[in-house]
Image (tube, rainbow, N blue to C red; front, top):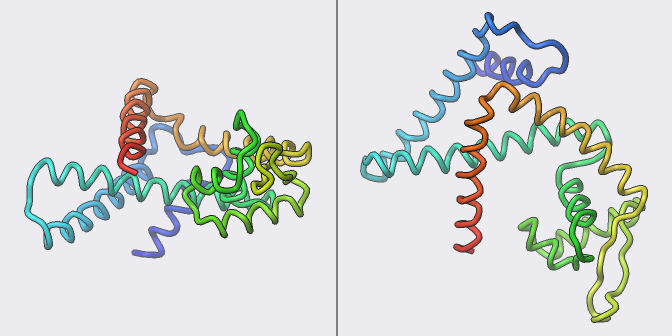
Length: 197
């Protein structure tokens, strides 16, 4: 069974022509595996906490969010490796490039939710590779600001082209109206999480 799951997982992310809509065996198998995993997690949850409709729904939602985020990151990381990059580098480059102000390392660490020393190492590597430029702040000499370089912008364009294809592969077969509702709900969840930090 594990080999079958691994095979299904690899097949799901292959490039090229997709199976015809009539041949939905793979989709049903993948859905069933996801349901089985969800049920297994719920059984473990019930061993320690009382059963309840609201509790079960909340558990399933948060569990699905965590698993989806991990799997997205893993698949996206595998794709951007072809460009010699990682998702951690990509997130940092993206924030440096598209923030209105030049961000300090502490601001970047907070936005990406990593520790300060981890962010410092990441920024040092990006600067060494010529993708960002680090310099002392004009307003506070104790702080270092970070700015994207032309080379960094080229890398962002390459990664964005690849991840755009991946996003399309992932989401194109889902009803656009459902995606709109999903985005609204997810945005509210993110706002609430920010309030709770």
